[in-house]
Structures are given as C-alpha cells and as structure tokens.
Image 1 (tube, rainbow over the protein chains, first blue to last red):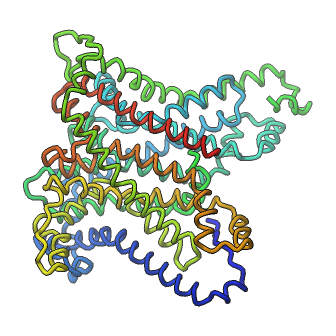
Image 2 (image 1 turned 90 degrees about the vertical axis):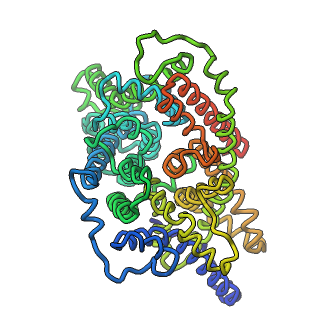
Image 3 (image 1 turned 45 degrees about the vertical axis):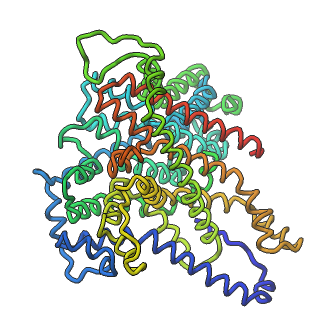
Length: 297
Length: 311
C-alpha cells in the first residue's frame, strides 16, 4: 500500500515543533483508546475459550482476569471439535469451508469473465447489460429470499451444499468491481495481443487475470466474508447437520436455557480462524484496491 | 471495434468473418454463466416476489389453489401495528447508528491518515470486527451484556461504587435497541473507516499545500479542504449505513428475537416471522417488496445527492 502522508515542510516542522509534539501525544492516546475498545472484546473471546470453568468465565470477564489465563487448556476445543454427534463443530467448520471455497472460487471466475467482456468485448448489448448489472445492485438479498426459498424447495435443492453456493456466485457488485478494474487498464494490452492472434479468452486468461491480483484479492475477501457470515439464508434452507454451516450451529447455543459460554467461545474462535487467515493473506492488496473502488462502487 | 481496423495482414490471412464469429461466441460464452445465474437467482425471484406478494401463497403447498388477492396483503400489513413498530424501530436504530458508527469511523480515519508508527497495524486491527461473523459478535456481546452479573454491569457497579443498579441490557425494552446499536457499530465500523481512509487519500496533497501557502491553519484546512473533498464519501457512507440499518436482522434474531415487548422487532425479522413461523409466504413477500422500495428510495436519494455535488 502506498504510504501517503500529509507532507509537512521541514522548516515549518521545527517552528511548531512543540505543538506538533503534543498533538502527536493526543493522537496516539486516542488511537490506543480506540484500539482497546475494538480489540479487547476479541482478545477476551480468545482468553475465555482457553478457560475450563464455564462459571468462572463470566465472573472473570468483569475484571482484569478477562485478559489473563493462568492455566490455558484446549479442553473446550476438544469438546466442540467433533465430526459427529451433538457438538460436531469440526464438521460444521468443514461445511463452511467447502461452501466458502466453492463460492469464492467460482465467483472469481464467473464475475471476472463477465467484467472483462463488459469492459473489452465487442458483443452487442454490452452497455445495456452493464447498466442492468448496476441497477440489480440495488436489490437486497433480503427482499428476494422469500420467492427464492420456494424456487429451491420446488427444485428439491434444500439441505444441500449447492443451495448455499450456486445462488450467490454471480453478483452485480463483483461484476462491476472487475469491470471497473479491467476498464482502467491500457487498451494497448488488448490490441497488441490481438495482433499476435490471441483469442479474447486468451487475452483475459493470460494477460488481464495475472494483472488483476488486487481486484482478485478484494473480491476474495469481500465474497469470503459474505459467504462465511451468511446466516439468514442457511437457516431457511438447511434442516439437518449434513450441510449446516458453523454460523447456524453457533446460533443454536442461544436457544438453550443456560448457555454453555465455554463451548460457544471455543466454537467462535474456530469460526474466526479461517476468515482471519484469508484476511491476513490478502490484506495488502485489499486496502489499496478498495481505495479506488469504494466511493464510486 | 478498433481491433479489426488495426489488424495486421498476417492476422488477416484468416477470413475476417470467421475470426469475428469465434470471438463473438467466446464473448457470449464468457458472459453466459454470470447472465444465467443472475437471471435465475436474482431477476426471476425479484419479479416473482411482486407476484407472490399479491397471492395468499402458503409456505407448504396446500390442496386449495393459490388465490390472487391483489393489494390485500399490503392493506393488511399497513393495518398491522407490529409492522409500524418494526419500521419505527429500524428508524430509531438508524438514528443512533449513524452518528455512533460513522462518527467513530470518520474520527479513526482522520487519526490514522496522519503519519504515525504502526499505522498499518492499527488499520488492520480496527478492521478485525468487520471480518467477524455477526454470530460470533453475538457470543461476545451476549456475555458482556449478561444480567445482572455480566462484565458491563460489574464494571458499572465497580465504578459507581454500587450506586447504579445493574442494567438488563437486552431484557429491558428501554435499553435493548441501544445495546443492539452498540454491538452493531462495533462490528461494522471498520468498513466505513476504510472507505473514509480511501476518501482522505483521494484528496490531492497540492490542495493542502496551496491552503497552507494561503495561510490557512489546521482547522481551516480541515473545514475548507478536507470536508468538501469528502462530500461524496460522506454521502456514500451515510447511505450504505442507512440501507444496512433497514436490513437489520441477524443480531436481533439471535439475541432478542424482536423482544422485549417488540422493542427490537425489525422489518426483516417481521418478514421472516410471517413467512416461516406463520407460514404466510405471500404476506412475507409483500413485506419484502416494501423493504425493496425503501432501499430503492434511499439509493435514488444517494444518486440525487451525488449529482448535486457534481461527482
């Protein structure tokens, strides 16, 4: 990411040195307070998941003991990490990973191909499709979900992996992000390849895709978060353990009379790890390319 | 189109029409998956929702035929007090979340835009809640909100020396929506922060330099350079946050189920309940059409505002 800072002339810097210095202290203090508010709940979650006594967890959280565990144990994780039975969070995690990988994988291909043709193709009606895609972006998932449930249950797709993947592969937002990214690349790239006799698919595959790592990273993170955190759709279309994602499984803790916070915390940490890994892997590209597309997107 | 004209003779050895045709086929082939998926899973259900909204379609098929009821569902929705309560609740939620979440995001972005050590680390840290699933957020905040001995109440009791009674954060109708606001702002503000950072970076440094030469102090530079430069960003952030607020569902469904006393009932929760608990899919579709119209109006408002700012 490019390091853009407000450039302060050196001379001015020394003149107002003390003022800048005290401002710096205020700035740092504010940042640290915000960091405390933002990060401490997550840190508490991690610490609590390593504590064995579920009655102690709540009592500890009101004090500094929330940030410290003297005898860390993975007992909670062992308890919920099963692949069958009542606490089969290992399985739910795997289900979510399968859904995530297939949704993001096919989403990258489908949406980038469409975005590329909309940017550089010659087929008639491109402009129309592009404006339709932008218009479709307004429709919220929540407002199509009722008829969609009827459609997939008529098609016998309930309680499958496919029903959680296929409907969310193509997305107006990501087609548009790819379109925007491809359109700003120089047209000489297309022309030169065309002269060499490359087909349009080859130009996309061998020239544009390798250049679009930032766009691919951004869409991977956004789509990954979206798929990973789906809640409303899977509760409507899954009934059994077979394809149940981990988000739905964790929510079932809240239906019980007294919540097993130790188990819920361990399952939550399990749920955070994969998306955290995805985010850390792609974060570099994500922030810098988000810069270009956020406001207009 | 420019491609054919600039083609060299070597390429033209193949007949032009064949080249064009195979190219056309390839383009259509590359567009087809997206167009087909969008049609089946977005356009068709969207159009269907308008039709279903005018029928008495139940969730599970019944022997009796589905009847066309015209605007009957809409009339019944408008006569239902609970619908108006849910609309009022999401408006209250919006009223609170806009200053809390966007204000915090804006302030953080301003702080992080300055040069400072570990800037990228903080940027990454502040985005962490945004990648955290709402279900996990509910686990964390569900413990923090515990009544009467949860962490928040313990801290308040300690700080006040026991003079302030424990608050039933999620069980008191006066507090429940505010508690939902707190956890929602905490979860989603990272996105707005990133958008604000992007907006700040898009303001050219020359503008600041010019203002400085003209003798503008830091406050004047903020007011006359930063704020005008961020107008489209402000519009974008406020609109996106408002739309998200009107779609409020997951945290309410998990933590309060719309209660206590319907104080956290939301439009989407109302829709899901009428569709799946009361099995009135036609009625629920009518609610979804109303939700779409609300979102549409907000989005059109955004376009209008952006046009006025000449972006």
